[in-house]
Length: 395
Image 1 (cartoon, rainbow, N blue to C red):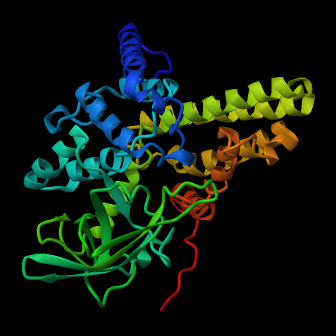
Image 2: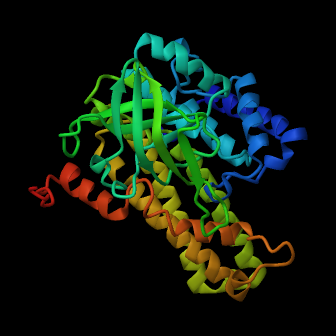
C-alpha cells in the first residue's frame, strides 16, 4: 500500500473530519475526548448508545463492509482515513466494536443468507450491541480449553457455563459464544459457535471492577440459557474454524485508529514534559523520540500487513499485537516518569484519575488481553519462523 493518499482520498478525509466535528457538538459534546480510550470505555453509556445510531444516520457504521450487506464498501485507503479521522476528532470508543469488526465479518464469511438478513442490519443501524464469549477462567489465551457446554433440547440450544473478561457484556444485547457441544471431545474439536441473546433470566452478568475504577469487563454465567437451534455459525463442531476466522478479523484496519489514540497520548506526554521542564532533559528527550519511532513503526507495519494479498497469513502481522502491547505499556511508564510525584496523587475532589494516570493503569493489561505476550511469541516462532511446536500435554 502506498503511504501517500490521492486527491480523492484527501477530499474524503475532509468529508469525514467535517462530519465528525459537526456531530460531536451539541448533545454529543460530552463524549468528545472522553471515552475515547479503552480505560474509560463504559462512561456515558446511554450517550454512547445514541452515538451508534448517530453514526448510522450518517452512513458511518460498517464502512468497510460490502454494500450488499449494508456497508459503504470503502477502499482500504479510505478505511484507513476514516479510522484515523475518527480518532483524531476525539470520538468515543465504539460501543459496538465487537458487532461491527468481529461478528459482522464472521457472519459475512460463514453465515447463512437468513442469518445475514437477521443479524447484519441491526449492527449497521446501531440497534443491537454485541459482546464476545471466548475466554473462561481456565481458557484465556488457551481458547481450545473451553468448558462451557451446550446441548440441543428440541428446537433450542441449552447453554451451561461461565465466560470471563467479556468486554461490554453489561451493555450487550447478544453474545457470540464458543461452546463445547461434544462432551467427549478435547481441545479444538467438538466446539460450536453460538449466537446467544443476553436479555434473558438465565444469563447473569457480573461486572468486574478494574484498577482504573471502570467495569468494561464482566463475568457472564449461563445458567441453562437458551438460543434457537439455527443460531449457530457453520455447523456443530465447526466452532474452532469460525473462531479462528473471527480472531483474524480482530487485527483489521481499525488498528490505525488505535494508533491515532496512541499518538494523542504521546502528544499529551510531550506537553506534560514541557510543563515540567523534562522536555529539555536529554534522557527524556531520547525516550520520547523512541516512543515516536515505535509509533511510526506500528503505522508502516499495519499498512504493509493490510495491503498484503492475505493479511491473515502475512508474517509481519504476527508481530503486531506483541509490538504495540509492549510499546504501549512502556508509554504508560514514560507518562508516570514525566509526571513525577504529580503522577502519584489525585488532583482534587472528586479525586478522579487524570487521563494519563488512567492510561498508565490500563496499559498494565495490554500484554495480557487479546493474547498474552508469551502466546504471541509462540505464534511468531511456529507460524512465521517454522520452529518446532511447543510441547503439548499428551493426556
